[in-house]
Length: 116
Image 1 (cartoon, rainbow, N blue to C red):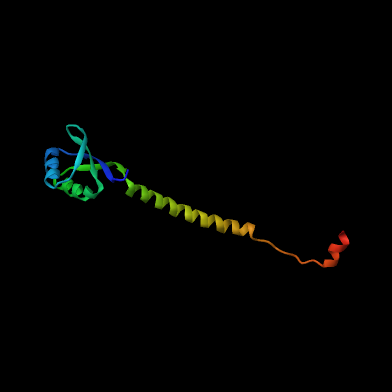
Image 2: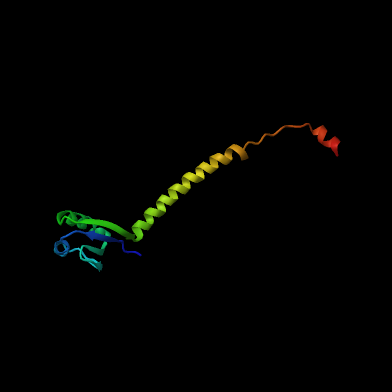
């Protein structure tokens, strides 16, 4: 959970060149599944920029399958917090129109005593 990693599906005709370039650039990866024309790998987020450049050089394509880690979790939480704050301010404004519209009518003290 603490390490940020991305699961990618790499497609292309020259996957051996792609893997050799990853090893040459010292990118640590875990191969999850290998097929003749595609490859599913897991890399760290810090190496993602290198993998993008290597993918372009080897004329391959990649798709992000999963994003895991504290970085992605904090991104989602902050977006959720932002949406909840905006919603709360909207509700406060909306309820302000109805709840805080209080009118006080002054009455004579004599009329209160007479009713008892």
